Length: 580
Image (tube, rainbow, N blue to C red; front, top):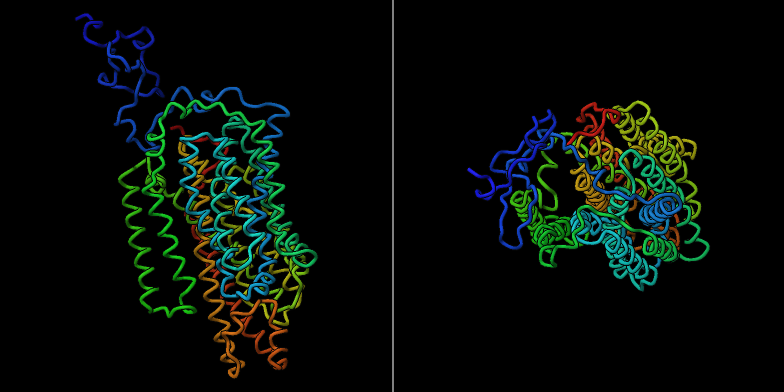
């Protein structure tokens, strides 16, 4: 039979050659027919059978992701882009830490101790909920303009926070800023992937990740300076010029050559790829979970219909979200293949509990210094430097250690052991704890924190093929953020419960609720106004009891991260990345 009359192209000489061991096998039915009908193209397609293969079952392709994206930026252009990304990540990290020393003054300004948890969780929940969706948005829309949009959203949220006339408006501004950060951090990593070949990315990511360490040190200190010397509002105003610089550089210089350019897709096709159903289920599920954690035991009893209803709603929405992801498969917001690999699952668990412990520790350690020790915001920032400097040193040194030895698992296990011990020792903090002991506790915890920011990302980059990494990194960022968003309200609820119980035990003649609605820095002036200065020690003991509850939460999260690290395989980053 003449192959040209059968509707199929004849095999070329290259196709007749024996297959190499690593070549992808195609069955005879995979040959694409030649058609005279308009609109059909002669291109090789992958069969459903091949698409269904797991990453570990796939055979390496001759053409890698690297060869599909030529013309990387070079020289000054590349350096300028990396510099802009450094500032972008610095914004993300700074906005999460600068507020810690300003919160006590904010609660005093708005009389809103019961809103402390929402200042952090409103930011974290929108960031967490939108990060996976932004991963999809980057895949079907322009990377450059999606990134610029993320920065603009973040800037709008910062402006709302800076000009907020009330605590509620501040919470809304934090939520808007978090939505922008959801795309900003993910976009920074994606841009690096399109601007550098794989061998050079770790060095660039090391420079960019160092911004977390710098911002972790500078954030509380700047927050203290602004709060004491100018106004806490400058903790948010500072974001505007930095963000404007990033917008200017990215808009003028960044050019991305994409082999997977989505410009041929219609708007309808792009919207379908966004998984709007998954996003519309994930966001309210998180909100329904956070609200009862924030309100339970304070605004409403834990057994009230409102609290129970929200928990039930969160559970139902989560079940529907999981079902939608199983139906969508690889097209979902969180593809199921990410949870089939034990190492990836352990990386997600590790990141979630690390984020929960880190954010809670930084937030409530600032409360300890300003409320119990009576420090100013600036002095509290200085007192927290041992924790944050040791964290920065650990972040740099553990990255170098992993690069030298190739193995990340023992480093992650060792660091989480230090974090667990340091957090456990923080539960012994009291009114009279000397600073030398406090210094030791902070350094021990800080040395354990360093690997947490990069640990999960290193794991997924090592165990997954290149094509799987973007969604996996998005998942790591999601779970780290979600861990903080979920556990800050838990810590806040236990903090308030500890205060109320402590007041009943040490000063039963006082109404504990008045201290929940007063500012964290207003304890002493409040007692003076009540003519109860002699009750100061009793009230401070109650605050210590509440803070002890939060530090136990931090210790439990650190221990959970330690156990997750123990579940990782001992793989080496020097052995290369598995093929798709």
